[in-house]
Image (cartoon, rainbow, N blue to C red; front, side, top):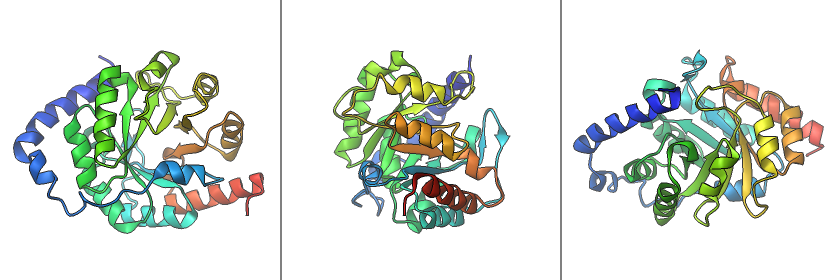
Length: 266
């Protein structure tokens, strides 16, 4: 069993227990459930930078990344630096995150917030809405085409946007549907956790032009973004590059400052 299979199996076990403790009707009573979400897609379309900055404590491949930075401060600093949105990992066993992190970010910023999770059930989408998310992620590697269609349409019914994440051309056909707002190309192979931005460059030519596309993972410097922009990418998810530093918000601000200089953006 590879890492991805292990994560999904653990999530399904956890979900069966969570549903017995908090049912969907209770989640739908959240004060945030009727909140109007903020569009990440529109932020990407109107940004010349397009950074989706991530709060991430650990990963299965790298182990501990940052358990000292406070989520509210990082989120606030990300917002001040000019990011288009914030991604929050909510998986605890493998990434050290939780839904409380999502809630704390939502209460701190006026930006689109992505719930970064391995979603396999509509219950998790209701959770995302109840805890203040604006966007969810659907990973093609763990879902069938039918599941992606069903879950993305359900997310839309709640007003949430959907990023469909692909890792290979074989997964692309699953996500070319009108209920997908953004296609994300993950440069990290979720089975081996090896990383290369070449994955985005190769797949960029396969994605139809009417889909907004973003590149995820392995973006280490501004030159990566300049290269990816030439291939039509409008958004760039960066987490580890910021979170591995003592001050992720400062690292993000410095990165964006350098990128603006390179792109001659005022």
